[in-house]
Length: 262
Image (tube, rainbow, N blue to C red; front, side, top):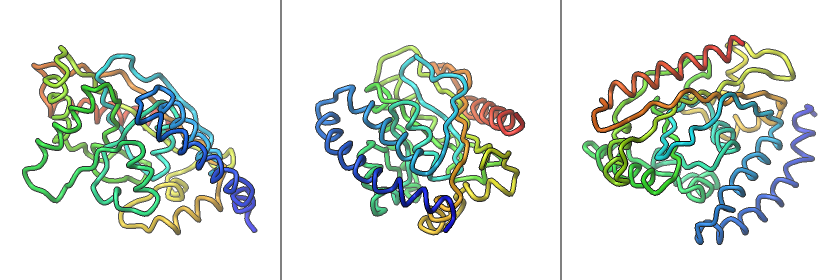
């Protein structure tokens, strides 16, 4: 039996019990909009990382300004717990995620915004929906690549959903929304640097089935992941959506490359 499987056999039962208790506490806290809900969310995801044997490192800090939209790269299903362990968040996810067993349940618990990429002409409505959430004070994570990468690079950003920042301007009645570039980097396994091929163990690309990938992750265990926050970009009424998208993409690309090198 691999060391990761031994760890999983010991930690998974504890995680399941703790997760059940946390969900029971989280549901009324979320309904009553208590700040406790965000704290419980973070605890849940920190426990998930611990169960998987993943150490989290945070560089920089989340912006204090609101409304706040995080523009992040995306390499694996593990990203969700890594980002969420840092601060209370909601995510923009494709509609299909909401139908997945268990994962869909937790995505809905975290108040994810589900979008339908197959509906032409729906982008404006979807951006408005995200904008309303930003205006309400929620911090939303947007994965502008539109898919997962191999963890070694940042794919071109799609600018369409950055329209959510403009929608939030109207909904919140503020002078500016802040778009903060954030990079996630998987850097080490068993204390040794991960190379380009090594990151394929962590990355979840294309139509790869989740269950076999999760089993491989549990077998490997003992990873280091970094979340790196860049400088927020001010998005006011004179801002150009495509320019902000390109600026955020450039920043995330730079943050990822620096963390992988370092």
